[in-house]
Image (cartoon, rainbow, N blue to C red; front, side):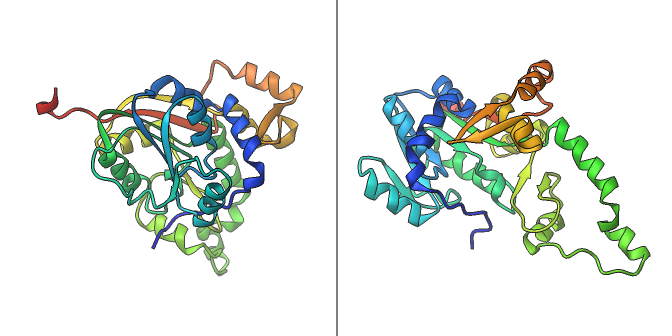
Length: 280
């Protein structure tokens, strides 16, 4: 059983999705850190927008996607694209097969946390190979909003409802399991169906190191996305898979440029698989 969120993508939006790579912070990091000489996997590739974009840049890249229907649609429409159906927890290749790896906004969707996915990425990456992995940020703005909402929403807190002999608010079972396991990661949404974990930089760095990786860099990214997620169209509109900041959004983003961890939607970790002593 795969305890993860599964997405449905619209193949008709493929061209717009590929164009969106031009302004995607995570894709820019891939162009910076990954070698064209390496065999690369995108783990959890969706419709393959990044696979197509990097192929056009001359990279040797293939994609792995959980949703079999999407994979079939992509292959039917673009037979030259190397995408196959599979689970990133069980990547169907031998050890140390890839020289580079990408995974954008994927590992946070497993209720069991990111460790199992990171271990599998470590297994298939060659020593010296680089991985670019992004996850949602529990940034300073979200931290403030969370605690403000805890106060405003006090009537839904279990201890408060118990005072008045009311039944607790029903919690989705996946989220209940996640909390019972003692994960420190912030669960989003706070109630209802589990969607994702959100991480502080230290939490995700620790997860990566715990699973064998050296962390080259941890970079806050996707600031326009952060404004859109937290404030909506008053700060930034989202059309045709591109962000269109408002005047107010531009002011906010400029004012916060010296506090990069305030409203970033994502963190990107640049990871490297170390060489064994015998390989140095």
